Length: 211
Ligand SMILES: [Zn+2]
Image (cartoon, rainbow, N blue to C red):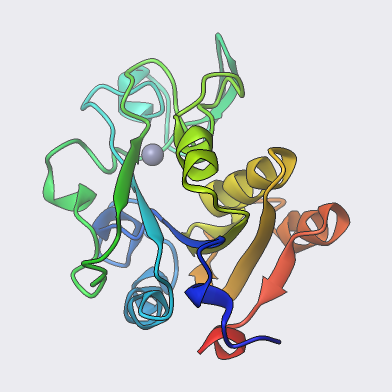
């Protein structure tokens, strides 16, 4: 495999939600989530183009169990746009838990895309909110910049990375996921992420393929 992946103006590294609340010690920890931060920082040095996403919710966000009296985290409810898993409060706008992990060091990232900022709707994918219709604007940005391939890293593999990879593929980008630069939350059904990727033609990279 080419070691020149990241040095192409057609390639963009997309770093999904490497934030304190998604790491051990945070309110919605992904096991081993902190381990990817230094790795992604090294990987990013091999890319001329990097975009980062940041989960960014108002304090009474509809995805929080605390916004639904009597409901507990990880239950599911029906919201106007469909089924929604209820989460512990996490990544509240301006709070420390929403900060990027301190070991994430990518000063040349050209765009930080904040998602989930509307009170009444969640956004797992970096491309669409969870109604699957409302665009975040990322597709337009990537197309206008001329990127053809999206290389994905971050948290959590089975939620936001997966939804983003599937949307990127559907939108016509070539897509790769860097396996050791992701960690999964481990929700029920998460083992099917790689099966889905294989079926739709998402490439599976390791950091060693790039560095
Ligand atoms: Zn969230």
